[in-house]
Length: 195
Image 1 (spheres, one colour):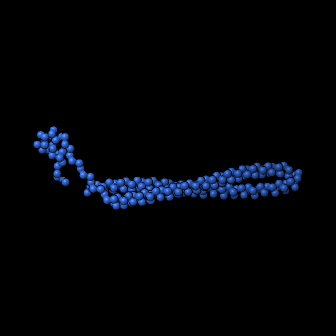
Image 2 (tube, one colour; image 1 turned 135 degrees about the vertical axis):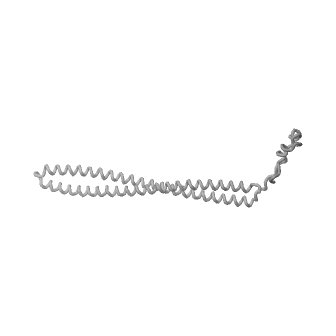
Image 3 (cartoon, helix red, strand yellow; image 1 turned 45 degrees about the vertical axis):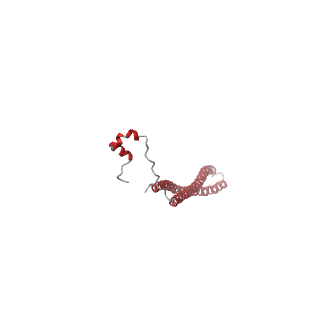
């Protein structure tokens, strides 16, 4: 109770106790009674609440991990598609270079042989037309590939932003889990204190 002095304080303040300090030093103070224990039903309810909170946090963490794996899989697939489109663009560029070389060769040969063989010139003109058509198709393919690559880059940036948001949410969930566990421990300790 407040206002009462402990035996140790009375021993140091009382003159009689001071004179008999040596004789009383062999005695010990009586053991303190343990505080009343918290009812098991309250502890069980508190443990159930903490367990449910931890289970929910664990489930959210698993969902977030699943989303991360799914997004990483999509990013890998998009990387494969971008790589394939890049290879197609390189092949189209190689074909364009070959066609341009062939076109230059054909024009040179037709220029040198125009006076000797009109039939050869006609065939060469047809080949030139065909190569021009092929070149235009190759240019269209390159343009389409560039558009697809630009679109994929935008999607990849969006996926990266989503991953960052998921990482932030994961850290928040871990922090909330730690706070819940700490609050649960503090609540249990507080409930066990003597009233």
